[in-house]
Length: 331
Image (cartoon, rainbow, N blue to C red; front, side, top):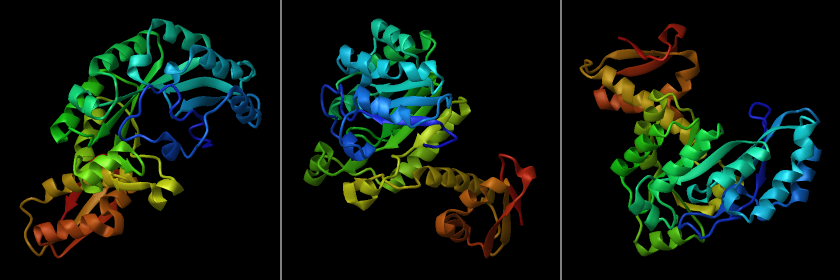
């Protein structure tokens, strides 16, 4: 458990899901093969010091679509730990069509402070082809209910789903930003072994959303949320030994996808600055010290690209506090 985030995850893979999305295998994504019980909750929290103030998070399923009695059981198991300060708040993840006024009241009674909604797309055709079983209208309605209740709202979106393209994904990003969530997770589509999406890909019904396509697209999506002041709290699937060992058979899986996207954004900005540079020049790009690595790119790929693109003799990066959020060019 990260001291910085202070989140204790409890996984309920596929619990409450009325159908299986074509891309989904929560057991492989979460690394958990069993669904939690009240005893799981009590056992996990018993190892946390009283007063630690962790956030208890139920991930991996559609929590509010679980039988209400089981929801009560899981949430009630945390009650003594909320009372002694071990748990400061509870977070749940669910689907948009499993949120109504009664559900929200249940969550409030049990100390839930954050609701994550798996919107995935705001295009009904894409949702249908992906087997989501809900509509964009469901997402708008659920988001409004969550915000009106005073709960923190996190929205999840995906890129590269069946039937989607760059324009549709950009529109999804803009529509999600308009819902004013407190944070966003962006998951470019990964083809997991054994899913319906793998079958579709192998049969030619679905074209792979590659890492390069995801990096290029997300480098345009990320600024949509940044300009709206909405934090992107996750970009790409959380890396795991299972995914890296081959459970991710194709698609946009990379252990450092967020770093690649932020690096591409800086490369694109540098490319604009360098237009008109004299071939054979030596140039220096100055960025904030904490952005030197991102500007350089993995294995120096950004600098090599810029040298080739503009026929430059050399491109170097220098950390400079004065640069702030900008890139300064010296030649």
